[in-house]
Every structure is written in structure tokens, then in C-alpha cells.
Length: 159
Image 1 (cartoon, rainbow, N blue to C red):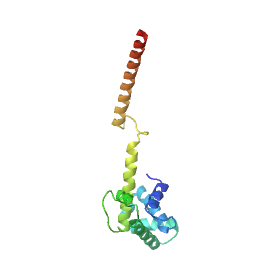
Image 2 (cartoon, helix red, strand yellow):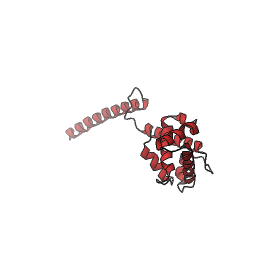
Image 3 (cartoon, one colour):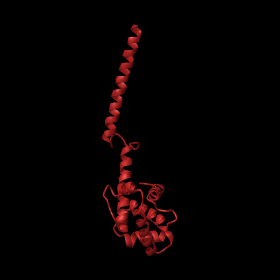
Image 4 (cartoon, rainbow, N blue to C red):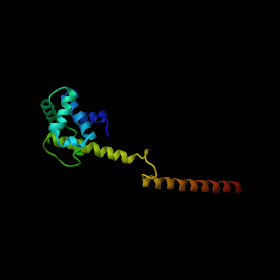
């Protein structure tokens, strides 16, 4: 799961100013949806309420500030990142807040999945067939290396 700082960094790249209340609300909201996808089902009754409670404000202020933030994002200069977030689909006008959170949830899930596939540090051979094949190939190469080293030694001894 992405960290809060990774989410904030992405929002800043999209042109969201850190002084904007929506910046904090969106960050916290994305974290909540990544922890529990059910927040995406009832955004008004659950997500806004929990964000408002966390920041000691009203859910109406949260909704308005998030809408303003999403509007700012859709006017960003970093259209490449925006297209990546939208998974290559062009969305010409600002999406509703719910759709925005769905897009952000999917984006951070995709990049987390992509990054976790790159790292097998926590895998075991039983869990990961690719790791098992890799270990087998390393063993074969080590044997071949030992054989070649032995042959090179014999050649040098003959000289």
C-alpha cells in the first residue's frame, strides 16, 4: 500500500497546493479507500463523514473542498500523469468525486501491484514458481562456473 507521502507527492505533481484543505482531505480519503474499498460504495455517508470527523469539520465542507481539489487536478499541466491515473483513458471533464476516488484507488492499487511483482524478497520457493526456477538456474550456473574454473586450472597447469 502506498504511503501518505507517496499520495501527497502525486497530488502535488497534479498541481494541488498543500495549503488547500482538499489536499489533506483527498490524501486521507485515498488512504481510507485503500484500507477499505467499501468506502467507495457510500462516499457521502461514510467517506465524507469519516474525513470530516478526522479533521473536525462538516461533511459538506469536505465534499466542497474535494470537488474544488478535483477541479484543480483536472486543470493540471501534468496530463501524462493524469492519463496514467486514468489508465490511458481520456476523461475530458472533471469526474464526480466518487469517480475520482475510484480512479485514485485503482491507480495506487495498480502501482502497488506492479511494484510488489518486481520484488520477491518475501517470497519462498513454494509460493513463487518463478523464484524456484531462478534458484535452479543459479545452481546450474554455479556448477557450470565451477566446471569451467576447473578446466581453466587444468589448461594453465598444462602450460
